[in-house]
Image (cartoon, rainbow, N blue to C red; front, side):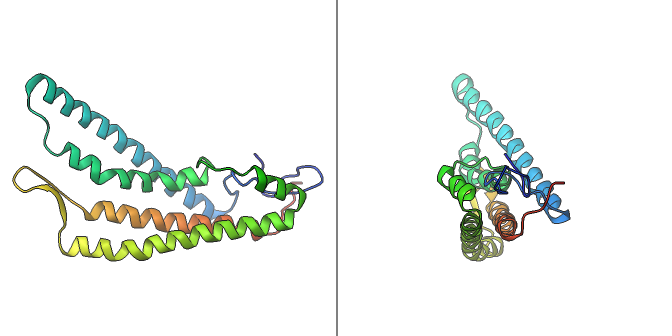
Length: 190
């Protein structure tokens, strides 16, 4: 993979899967995305432990652990939004960019415009998710929505909605940084 401004021979291009090589904002985004990814990974580990405790309790003691199914249902979307920013930043999302790389190599200006357009559309998509998620977050907090059955197991919904909002904000900013990277003039490595 190549970074911004790295010499690729006759054409100076951007690798569409590489993370940007920028300043303080880029480092801050990297730290936030990496921390959220680590939190998502830790939560996956916690869920695996809960699932094993539940399965063992069901099988050996005929006593399942209350709330495991609800916790899994509730937090799967949160895990996605915790890890999405870092996966996108590191170029680890599933994508097919062979044709795009060809355009970048043969027509760098057109490739940069297309890259900025694609990342701009990604930013718009994340803003649309925010537009729909913020009212849901506020309502779930105000109305104290929860999953589960009272008296057995309940968990509030708003923390997961907050994670979705934070993840969408991070992704919108990340896509904006990617679009800016495509629109910025190449830098010399020398």
